[in-house]
Structure formats: structure tokens, C-alpha cells
Image (tube, rainbow, N blue to C red; front, side, top):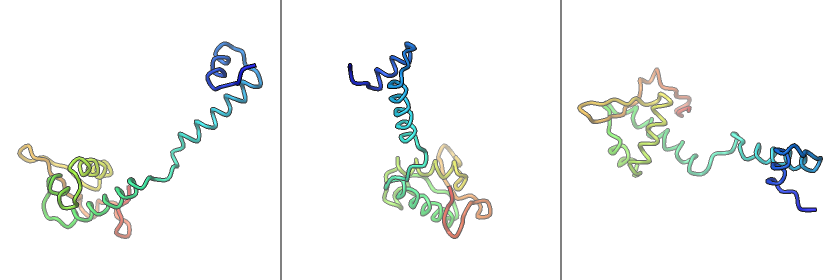
Length: 125
């Protein structure tokens, strides 16, 4: 008798040969996939750092009178333009920051303070 692997169990199930051993192996696979796909994972270290940086960027933009380009904001915070662009996109999607274009140049500025979702000085996403 061969060792029951996930591949063998799936082959047997497809062919209609469902035994107790196959059923147990497929149920174990189902549990393993459920754990892997759990959306309640804790955020990674980088994700936690990015959340803090997004809050700082949103607060910074609230205190600027005019919009700023992504490259200028990135230089202010010492990060790459690519990373800042991704963070600004998340802020725009969360409607914390608005994006507008003037003469083919894109600027970012905070939405009005009344419209922004701020709780105790922290940005909610």
C-alpha cells in the first residue's frame, strides 16, 4: 500500500474512488488551505511601518497649503518615489488624499479636514 498524498487523494476523488482514507486526506487539505487563506493574519513588520508612514504623510499633507508632487513628498520622508507612489495610491483610495493634475503634472493634497477620516490624530483605513 502506498502512502496517501494529497495528489493521490485528489486523483482518487476525481475518479470516484472515495474511501475513508481519501476523505480524511482531503479534509486535512481543506483545513490546511483554510489556515493559509485566513484573511485575519497579523500585518507584517513592513505593513505596520507603512501604516505609520501613511499616517505621517496624511498629517503632513494636511498642513501644506498647496498640493505636492510625489517625488517631493518622497524626498521629505526619505523613501523612494515608487514606495511613496504606492502609499499615496492607498491614501487616495481611502479618500484621505486627493490627486489632481495641472499641466500634465500630478499633485497630491489632503482632502478637507471635515471630509477626512481622522480619529484622535490617526488616519483610519
